Length: 590
Image (cartoon, rainbow, N blue to C red; front, top):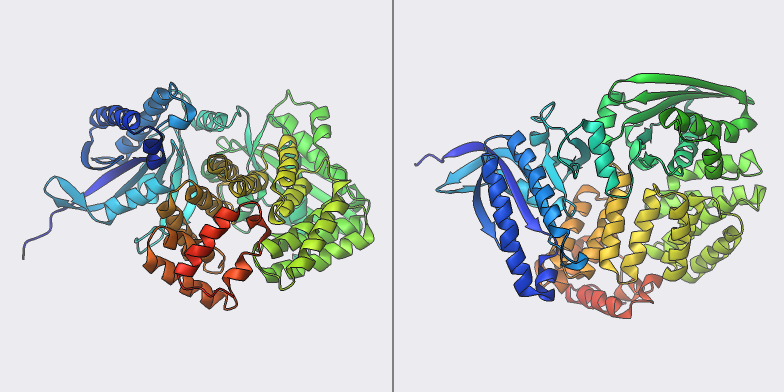
């Protein structure tokens, strides 16, 4: 038996985002531009000691003897390609995605084969436009050797790859690579119009006993929200920060994984009517610290939260005045008990299943009973009823629609200065089918808090429902940047998949949906979209597989019931296409 020739290599895979759409717009110009871009790529690969060994359509695959050389090359490629595309109209630019893996490969003549190559291709598919994704095996070889921030995206299940793969994003600066990792963070942030300190508020330690966990989380939520509204900051969303809860982590690791220069840590102790909050501000790379302690009556909680945000902001960015924090303050509820009930409901709002919503609704109703003018409680109640509609969790859709609209009306008068409540209201209106009103609320939320990852994600869904896939993709990518480790990242990924499906890239949309259901088997609604998209693309086997999974999870699913979703009212053609795909997969009509 002939021995198989193998070797270890760093594999770089690249392709063009939306190439089919570009060729449909102007085939000759696009192909000519692709050839010139491939010439640039080939020159960069040669400069960094690599070799191109494969091509298919708009994609190229190269090997390098070193992971460091591959990553440095990928950044130089993106810089030169981005510079070239600046002269082209926005809708005609060729944006490349790059994936890099270090693995064992099979040598077959001049070709390389095996999972080592396949993983690089899957990582490339995950990358954002002009983005670079690398595997954990590459990341292990980069410490101290590159000047780019490497942000963890967690473990991902990749198509046809048996084991999950650790994935990292390379946050490359657009200028030539001078400076340190903090400089890379600033350059990366600048792509979204930001050039300022980056910060994360970590989960605080609860010193009061297990029953107070929700209260402590609420303190962190409010401090994060206040800092997020200061325009001079780039603030990581609480959802990503809370993935570290209960874990001992080094602040330097946190800084590198989330791409931030400052970390806020703290403790909360509540006893009787007394409250003590201790806060530590740490510069992540140098670990320099600043301590503050706040102690007083429990009723002082709102003042404490705002004062902490002001102190942190002033320490990180001395030019920020207290007046800027005051602008960011949200009017507190009139009752601490009502606030307490809303904080108890918080974890259930993101449960993404109907049982969690059932637990949240009575808590919010009790809060409203205590304080009928509490706008955030009304907004969250609307969000709960709207989720029942949007995900078809309700047996009484008309009742949930009426409850959602009633709660929206009650919230409207008192949430002008609360981005979280505005986002909840906008998201609820979107699920209820009113995309124009939803846009208005979400735009107000994002004007107040441009770091609002949830707001950008809901704004992305609105764009998809309005048939604007390019805008949707941009908004989802911004949301994922602001919350790179978000437990609900799968929702953003499915939104991105929908934008791709609407743009005609059904195969990529199905690939993302498969990734989501593999990693999150408890979330079943993506099977609906996966079934329809697979059938629409002609992949009948995948469509029937997804339909079988859907019926196992939701035995009562019917096409007729699916079409009751209010979001379909504004897009009847899209609804008809989805319905036909579901029929082709064999799902019941009624």
